[in-house]
Length: 189
Image 1 (cartoon, rainbow, N blue to C red):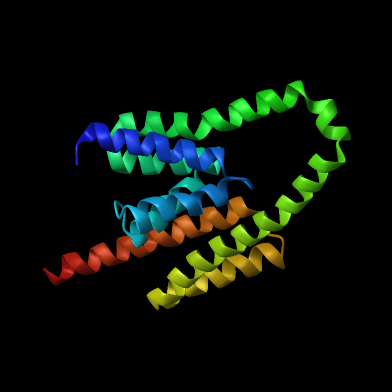
Image 2: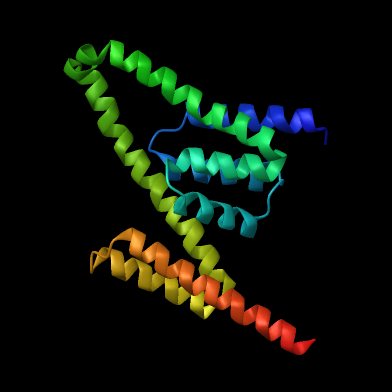
């Protein structure tokens, strides 16, 4: 596929998703997966999970981080620029308009009802993200990954361990696991 058509598709896909997505970064990441993995088949499922993990562990908004890693994977630095523009333009325009009419929106019961109703949809989408990512880990049948997933949930939900500590711990586990695998491969040669 021509680079210009990939760049155009990356920009308009992130622009469209960012325009019509409510509920934050986890929602747009799910829709990026749907678009680039399920519909276009440009990224495979495991690679998308890796990209999402990178986006989640990087500082900043996950929607922008997700766009960055997907844009870079598909088209390098120009893909990053266009994906970020596509992800940032809609919220910028929407927030600018809302700020002009803030008092009218704050007092309007119809707008308040719409926003309250959208919370339910956002909850469903976040549940879908958890299901997709969790089922991918369970289907891998990797006991270490399943154990990490369960331990991370328990640590955060029940013991209120800060997410940063959980992320750093999982990074250390991942590095150690990778080093052990590489050492075993080297020993087998």
